Structure formats: C-alpha cells, structure tokens
Amino acid sequence: MAKRLSLLMGFSILMVVVGHAAGWGQVAMFNWTHKYLPVASPNYDLIGTPAYYTLAFLRQAGSFAVAAFLFVGGFFSAFSARTADPKSLWKSVRNRVVALLIPYTIWSVLVFIYQFIIGNRLAPLDYLWRFLTWGATGPYYYIPLLIYLSILAPLLIPLAKNRPRLLITLAFGIQFILITIRYLKAYLPASPTVDILSRITPSWLFLQWIVFFTLGMVKGFHLEEFKDWVNRHKKLLVVALPISLFLSVLDADLIFRITHINMFAIPILATTLIYTLAVILLFVNFAEIPPGISRFFYELGSRTYGIYLIHYTAMEITAKLIYRYVPQLLANIWLLVPILFVVGLGIPLLLIEIIRRTPLRKVQRTLIG
Image (cartoon, rainbow, N blue to C red; front, side, top):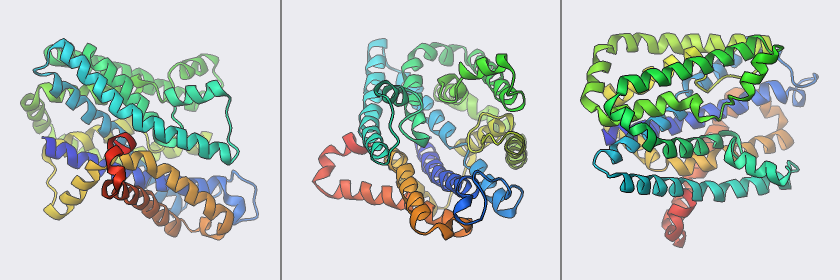
C-alpha cells in the first residue's frame, strides 16, 4: 500500500503542475488579453474556443490532486495510530506539524518578500492571516489545511477505527452542505444569506476537504474491508470516472460563463467530488503502472513537498516575464502552457537536486521537507 500511495503522490504532484500551468493559460486568455489583442481586460471572448476547453479539461483533470494528498495524510495518520498510545500519537502529530511548518514558513517568507518587491504589499496582520489561511501564494492553502486536519486527527481516530461508516456519513453530510453553498453562491450571488454562508465557509476551511482525509483514515484502519468495498463497486467507479470528468468541465464552464467565477481545478463541485473520489479509490486499489513510469512517479513522490512549495512561484515569475517581454506568446496557449509546465516542474527538481548534492543537504528537511 505504501508503494501505491507513493505513486499516487507522484502522479498527483505532476497533475498539480499541469493544472497550474493551465491556470496561467487562463490568466493569459482572460486577464492579459489586452497584451496581444486590441481589447480591454478581463475579456471573455475566447470562451468556447478549442483552446478554452483544452485548458478547462487540463484543470479539471488535475482537480483530484490536493484531495489525494489529504487522503494519503489521513491514511498515515491512522496507520501511525494503529499501535500508538495517546501520548505517542500526539508526539507523532507534533512531529508531522513541525515537518510541514518549517519549510512552509521559510518559503512563505520568501514569497512575501518577492511580492513586497513587486509592489503587492499587505498590512502586518494580513500577512499573518494569509499565512494561517489562504497561504502566501496560489496553492499554499493546502499546507495549513493539512496541518489543521493533522491536529484534528487524534480526535477522529476513535470514529475511524470503531465507527467508520458513521464518520464517513458525517463527512459526506458536511461535504454536501458546503457544496450546496458553493452552488448557491455561484447562482444566487445577490442573496445576503448565501453571502454570509459563503464567507463563513471559505475554500481554505478544513471542513471543505474533510471527506478525503477521513476516507484516508478509514482506509488506514480497515485496509481489506475498504478494498473489498471498492472492488464491489469497481465497475461503477470505472464508468463514473470519465463521465464525471466530462460533466465537471461542463459544470465549471457553465458557472464561469454566467458569473466569471473560476471554479476549475478544485473538488468543491458535485461533479469534481465524484471524479476525485473515483480517481483516488481506483488508483490506490487497482492502478497498474509500467516499471519505467512507476520509477518516475516514485521519484516525484519523494520530492512532492519541495515541488509543491516552489513550482507556483517559478511559474508566476516566468509568466510575468513573458507578459512584460514576450507578450505575443500569451496568445499561443499551445506553446505557453508547455513552457510553464517545464518551468514549474524543472526548476523545483533542479533546486531540490542542488540541495541534495551540496552542503545544503544538511538542512534539506528544513528547506524542502
């Protein structure tokens, strides 16, 4: 199981980079259109084009990735608790939180400094708030999210171990309520009640993602029972995966067309939730990957945290340099997105390799986990 989870981590971080490269493609398509066309930005004339749907597909295809990280986190939280006493369990949680927090703090400070230099400045308390919630940049919200769920894990362990169906039912109930709020916010934006509900349930809130973490915990305690259940529903999951991916593109597309709210790439819609669950459950139980490819995913899996911390800022800097010096490239997403993907994967891997092969390896865990 550990090997499958490592493969899942490697595959997921690859899709994170793909999704964020496509996300910058959407920025170029809608927010930077004025750099290559005689229009004002944001401009949505390219909605419905083949390039638009390609970006939408790439973003939705990778929408499972953060949820997969949380599933793995839940699994190892439960696995480490199978024989641990309460004191050792809280010590394990503390160690996990520290291992996440130190690199996150270092890279957050570096990102805040970069943002300050380019003119994106916040009040002192806003820096703290961002650090604790949304994160310093794009995908960083995942790290405090995982920290909060890791701290919550010891309280969920008795249910995951002894009442797994109850825990999963409660988690899905919470997920259903929060997904409903997301749809209401998209289609009833003028409602004061919906606005209040949306404000108190932001996307970074750990409850938005708790179903994936709890499923991982249940898997950690009930390996065979969990696999038997998935095996009984394998055909349904295989059918649901491509259908839910297709519907998720249409789902997010409709919301974007009506409201211009971008809900691509995160599993907070019903369709992306189904797709995410199908990917995770099928992958951890049935995925068969050729040895050559699996070695590549293992390598990525061992570097997941470092790639996650570095890739988005590398992409952002590259995209802004293109915006400033080669704006005509923004019009060609077929070239732009691959460039950003190579940068987003290549620069973190290069930096990680430098850290591992130089005296910096002594502080490797501090820098990249």
